[in-house]
Image 1 (cartoon, rainbow, N blue to C red):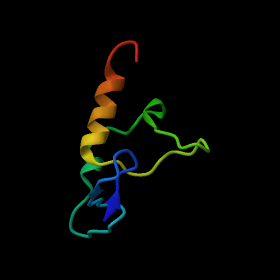
Image 2: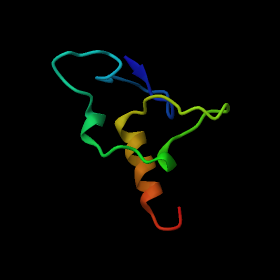
Image 3: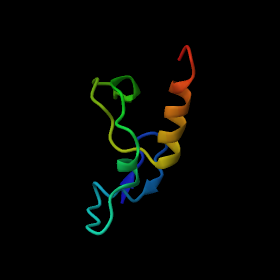
Amino acid sequence: MSLCSQCGIEFSCGMVDAIPTQQCWCTALPTARKSELVLDANGQAKTCMCEQCLASLRASRAKPGC
């Protein structure tokens, strides 16, 4: 199981949890733009986000002026 770097909820990540018969749901999404990356205090990209947090982030950044 993985932990969402945004909300801390536990979720199954097909990339990290290595479920050989299925790909992670995130592989169906378009590749994230550099502007969509969430950085930690050291400027490094944070790890996986749950589906809800990633959808919320993308929706908020898709609005003009964001």
